[in-house]
Amino acid sequence: MAKKIASNLLVLFTAACLLSSLFGCGQSTPAVQTPTESSLTQPTINHSPIPDENENGTETYPYAVSVPIGIAPTIDGTLSPGEWDDASVETFTDGSQLLLLQAGDLIYVGIKAIEPKTIAGNIFISSGNEITILHTSAALGTAIYQQGVDGWQQTQDFSWRCRNTSDSEAAQAERAEFLLYEGWLAANGLMGTPNELEYQIKLPDQDFRLAVVYIKARYPYEKVPWPVNLDDDCIQPSSGGLPSVMQFSPAQWARLELSR
Image (cartoon, rainbow, N blue to C red; front, side, top):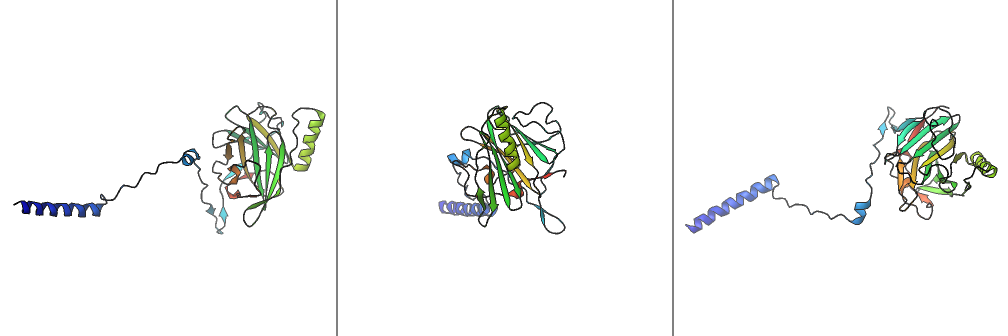
């Protein structure tokens, strides 16, 4: 009798195992990976959408911003009431504001960070095979990269100017000269309101794309990007200065719709 019961139990056990394998219930539970410190501190990045294709089969990136025409604001580092009322308002990944305005042959860019603390700024302009970086912090500087085989090669490093934050004749003359020869001007990051920046940029002669990053000027110097899907070297740490080769993806950047 005991042998018969054991035999029946063996049959039932075998049938249970067969059903378990058929419906997946017998699959082992995957091991839970313990997050490392680096995985906990890395920000979540949303990648840009796959580009569309037009009737000719060429890729088109839909991100475009219409820039309204208005009255030129004063570049003093403070977004004064009324100056930017006509501007297009965009947002950074943290909700801070980016203001875009056109007056004559100049584009005006305003940045208003949420936190009331000192910030610095980088504006990236891609035109043809060249990328220009317009930086303001305690001084102004322009860096230039040319497209190469293995990435974008630096052809001009920053040469710092306009450290004088006063309204003296000498400081104003230096800023006017900088605008004339560099094709852009910004308020020194130590001027005006700490969490606000203002730029004026001469329109490039050909089509271009734009990316903007503001930098929280305190350790660990977090870079906050626009457009919000930006995930190329514009937002990578660059302690000790910019590297000689960078990986940019201008297709992720914004195209500005302007009046010429």
